[in-house]
Amino acid sequence: MDDDELVERLRSIASRVDPVPAWVESAARAAFTTRRLDEELAELVHDSWDSPQLVRSGGDDTHVLAFETDAVSVDVQAGAGGLRALVGGASGEVVVETPVGEVRVPIGEDGWVVVPELPHPTVRLRLVGDDGRAVLTPWFTA
Image (tube, rainbow, N blue to C red; front, side, top):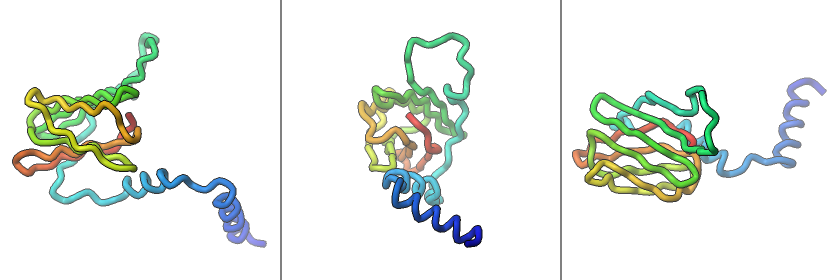
């Protein structure tokens, strides 16, 4: 038996004993799908999980992120209590996309978007402006 045959046999055994969950395959496909060409990709400018913790927190697992384009900013707080986002520079709706579905929420007059419960912790936000402009954030974990 050569190396290629051994690898194929091990792959076959692993797929029978411990198959990849469907949601993982779905998330992987979503990560590699081509975004719509008319959507502008928002840049991640802050991620609280990348910041060093100087003081031990009291168990608050809120993930704080900030995204922006030239015209739009999105400040996100996500965690066990759902997702809150403050949108600046846009009105319309936010589509919270997950590997298992999406939730559409209008942007309030004050710029806030609140989703009390997320269907999945892996999300990205698609802002669809009243003017037809669309902004898309990268995928992140709530």
